[in-house]
Amino acid sequence: MKLIPFRLIVAIFTIGIFLFTSCDKEDNDTKEEVNFNSDNSARAARMDNVAEGTFNIMEQAFVEIEVEGRGTNQLSLFPECTEITVSIQGNNVLVLIDFGDSCTLNNGNVVSGSIILDYGPLVGGTYTVTYIYNDFIFNDNGVSGGGEFLYEIANQNGNPQSTLNESIAVSFPNTTITGTRNGLRVSEWVEGVGSGTWLDNVYHVTGNWQTEFTNGFERSGEVTETLVRKLSCRYLVAGRLEVSQDGVTAAIDFGDGECDNKAVFIYNGQEYPFTMN
Image (cartoon, helix red, strand yellow):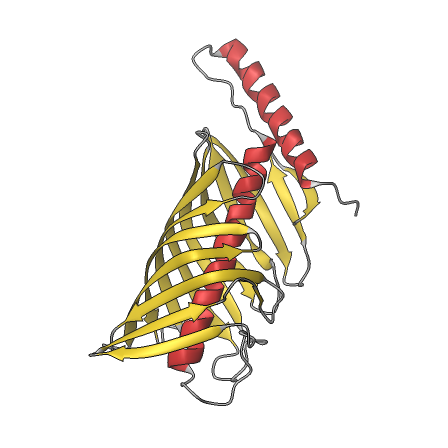
């Protein structure tokens, strides 16, 4: 199957929407033309990947420190360039995850700055964790803001699960445009629980979120088929995300579970394979 660049896919999407709304406008003059900008759509896709990658880092740090036990022998996601400081303040635990000026994690992502976690004791099988990003950069994209997540030791399926309320801002290289993302993300840990290594960790992700840019662009996303994240892979490997803009809906399908950078953009019944950067 021939792969085409993401910008071309979005351009096709733009043309298709333009033709659809133009023809429809002949019958109903009250409908407005929809204009999809390829740069904005590409930034939105990048923002989704940045958000998911940073959340995985934060969650894995919490798991390695609190769930799998401090000081145990385990294969960590974090190399020596990561300094993790744990301090006890009354009933609360404060964790500083410091990546310094640059640190390449064991899964290949390059980060800098720090993340702070703050949480109390286990209550009713759950931890409530507050997190904040501090001068944090993920693969050249700046991330700020924070939120809170509820970590369940065992959900109704018997698996660990985190339910995260997010409110973050992302800055992109080579542009003054920044984006914000607000929403809900539920991550169920379905494989690799208790193995002592991050390499076999697999998560099922659901949720919905709203993305807005400082240039006025807005887009909503909702998981319609559970997304699958293998922590050893830099990309989502399965599932489908429905995206909506200006009343028009499309979807991104992330594949059948293989770790690769291939996905399919779906609009109006047509499929356009593309390569994720």
